[in-house]
Image (cartoon, rainbow, N blue to C red; front, side, top):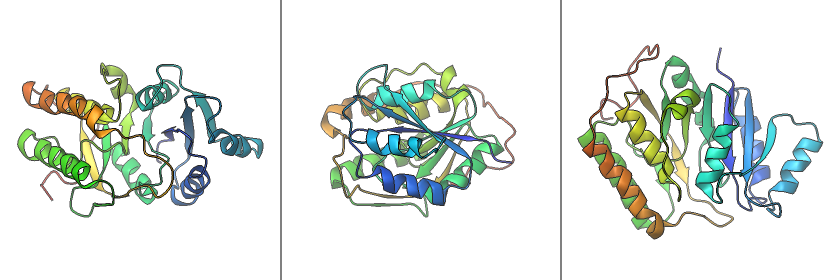
Length: 252
């Protein structure tokens, strides 16, 4: 029996995308889930869509106001604070991730992995669209962390991951700017001996709405955690009932 899945969805004026995202979640994810949709300000155009779902009696939607700091990091961490136990999936509302992979990711979590990555850069994954330079940096950082540091995912920077909430609470999270948060968590979890798996996943650049990704202002923060991975030793493995090796550990 699969674990109940909590999903944290940070939003910033995603009113155009949310109906499509919700329809995909309901049709493509077979696991029971609760969605914690985290917003920064009361005028966000996502809220009327969500309030409509709640008014129609959909109890899977939890509206959460970001109470830490404005921006994606504060929103994600606020969402984590509303999860009591078990697995939590971070999902952007930009329709870029393949939700048909979620049940397979959760199956790996249930085998004992603490992080399960939707990987764009392992065999079977792919990336479509987006700025070329951003793609290059993301791919090279993920591949080199896998090949030269031994982190068992080819896509450490991807935000589309399932985390064990108890693992998250054991880490000191320092990110305060942007999506480097997902890299920090992956690196620190690896160094702490937690188990990481990946599954191939396609990613497609958003077709509507405005991206909040800010490459040049966030790049130094990504580099901080990239080099952190090489400067620190890994602790002994923390195995949690794992039955088989992580997908992609053989370099495929």
